[in-house]
Length: 86
Image 1 (tube, rainbow, N blue to C red):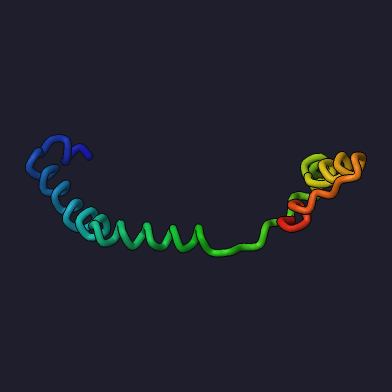
Image 2 (cartoon, rainbow, N blue to C red):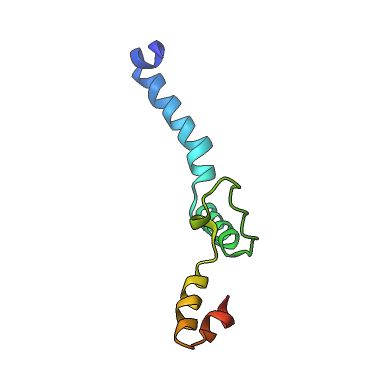
């Protein structure tokens, strides 16, 4: 580090070499587009929903549509839209 701080030509040469070897090789538009394609494919691929940790309280893991169904039943209604989706 002292050599780089003391010798501007050495510092510029080292900087240029780093740019040439790493930046220009790995940060091209083609590489960026490939990374975006890879990430979008990964994000769009189906995955199983992970199981919640066993120590979560019931109000975090309960089946949320059930309270809506219970309220609808009190009025003699059925929430068919929830049956179709869930």
